[in-house]
Image (cartoon, rainbow, N blue to C red; front, side):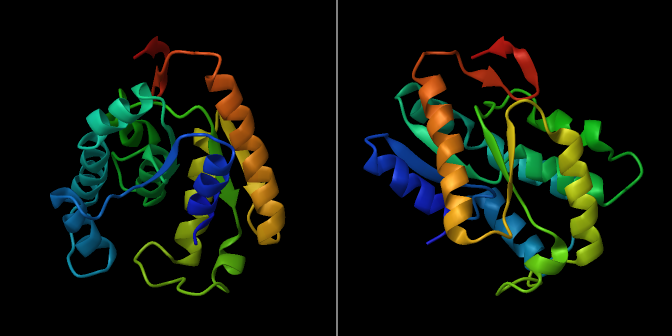
Length: 198
């Protein structure tokens, strides 16, 4: 069971209506194109791929908003931050971090971002690492640098090289605090536009 699914099960055990969402959603029409790209079966222009990832999130926007307005807590495994960091890390002229963020402006903003940090050398020791095109050490180091530029006051960094138990304790604490804060009724915010509400 993934860390994200374990968090959902934990929240449910506390009476929180929680569900897991994963991006990219590889089961939509756009998601199948992304899956083919990530697995190395097809190639595509970097800007076009970035926009596909963003479109994959946009095609789920209405369902996401409906779930949130119905009182669901969404645990999202990867989101717009991943898309921006990975594309910017390619260092393609014209595709800087601000360009990478732009297509996702207007999506629902998370109440808490839990960034599981791990050095590429440590990640390489884990099973399955290296099977997808972005799982290369130099790329991962640059991705981590881009993530650091995206961090804001909703971010919580957890050292993922710790034991699963220690990581889980910290993740649960962060999630508990976010759920408690949301229960006080703040309006949903828009991604990268903190002054706007949904």
